[in-house]
Image 1 (cartoon, helix red, strand yellow):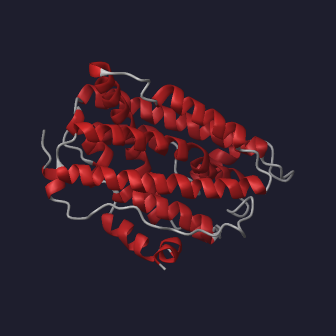
Image 2: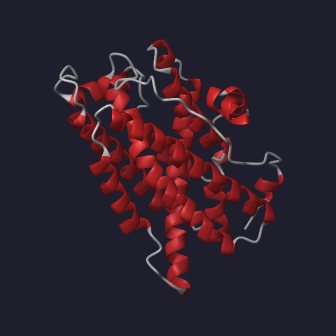
Amino acid sequence: MNTSVYDDQAHAIRARDVRFDFDSVPMHYIPGEVMATHIINVMHLVLPEGERAMAAALAEALAYIDDERLREEVQGFIGQENQHASSHAQARRHLESLGLDVAPMVETVAWLVDRILGHHGLTGRAKHEWLCERLGLFAGMEHYTAVIGEWLLTNDVLEAKNMHPAMLDLIRWHGAEEVEHRSVVYDAYMHVDGGYLRKARTAVLASSSLLVLFVVAGGYLFAKDPDPRKGRFWPLQFLSASARGVVPRMSTFLTEIPRYLRPGFHPSQLGSMDNALRYLAQSPAAREGRR
């Protein structure tokens, strides 16, 4: 086991107070892009429940982590993920107030997360093995959230589309923190287990699961959208938005697997930490939280 990566990182990960004002956000906050709006909305459905399970697994992993630097990183990560879940829940409640019936999907995702990714009351070796399995799966998922986070920080299409500034700030703030803590779950997995075969297997599972969740949840949201002018065939809107760069390309969930599984790969090679920290320093919601 090698923890030298942590020795090279002086930056401390910490949760930030943020204050978002969603009162003026319309149902379709990317004008003229119904399906793209709902793909972004998937974050308000899927990510809070997944991040809750991820934070629980990292808290459980602390008992197996004897590296003080890594423990600090994990504790900061847990704080950030809890803040993400809270902020996205606030945005979700606003969308519900506009008539978007998301509760059944949220309840289903919460049930699936608890049913599939809970600790299941295991003990001894079985408990440790299941923890390693979850850490491997979450490390794979965090690879994609870091990649999408970098896309959010560097893509100017959403601004050109006049996306509502509060929602744009929400997803960029979240994306910046995903880039900031991109290495934590991966390093926790390598510390607690580190097996390549498990890493490969869980990466493929993470990739396919996220792709399915985005498509299914996005389709559900489109169906529940009460606006009669939303259009009819959401898959075409979805493919069009992806091709035009209004949402990340769904092919990313396939093309990133070789990079993640390449010998010598480490998440610190993803994105730009400077981009992330610059945005976090000037995010309107983060500035409000510092007042």
